[in-house]
Length: 392
Image 1 (cartoon, helix red, strand yellow):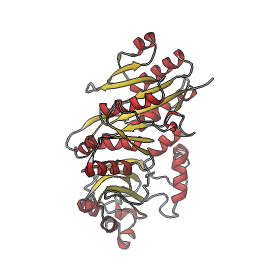
Image 2: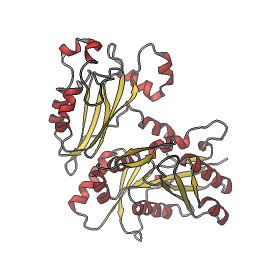
Image 3: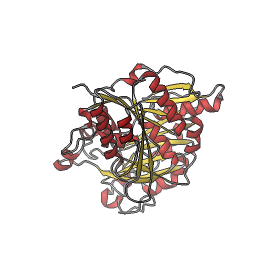
Image 4: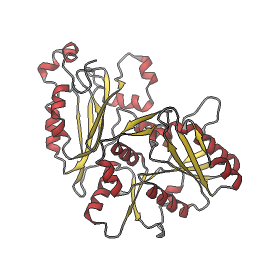
């Protein structure tokens, strides 16, 4: 039985999301659009409103309604209803900003006991994200309030508009950036930053006028390469950091820092001001001396930095933990394995404008434990005061 095709579209404004959908429909005019809005109720599941276009009257009446519940469950039901009603549908699922795209897709495609997998009925198309550069720049500077972001696992975590904006960009297989005529250097600089934050996505610029037709590349309306769902899961692994190619445009560049000994938390806390100067986005993981067994994730967007204890380092001989880890995690652990440190390491990618690679590397290197501190062993490391996460 032939499968349907599922295109996922997101955007940092309703207007740019609609623009991407319009361009996609010009390429695939028979597609069914399932547009979604989510309204947080403060506690429990949100209200999920769905709107359809291009479907039959009966199906449209069934799907165009509000429901309170897990968004993943609701969308699976909607997609299966469309699949039953149409032989080989192309569905365009237009997501709101309140959904964290990558973890949402992992949950949407995850097999569940007692029901057929979505992958038995649909092939995923490349993920399209529309980004309005002016709004993106504004969001990147907004770190003083929080917004709920649903991750597909049944809960909403508070985060900043800056973090929401960069996660959308990082989730894309293709970034669609509308540009007005004579956008100027500032607009070009914002577009360069957007492209740098996800250097592996295709970056396409289109007119910001919906009446101006832009022919999208054919691969955007075809199934994504095999293993797309595994690729989403891999990109969420806390010990896997996406590396950007070197080279600069409009002053935008990326710096990769890595080291194989623990960080002193107090020296790191004192150094944050120097490290983060000019940084728009940074992602990675740490090995803190105060928490030698914990994978501590490092994530910043704009001026907001978040450190979280996200996982445990894999240990030699701990068979249960190794079997529970994903194949990607086990592969990376074997690549980086050290006879003494195991897979423990620090790795962070910084992206921003006019970054000083020398300053970032030197400052962070100075935060590593010295030979004398390292010789004290775990008993000496763990008693070091930790202003960042607190001592365990």
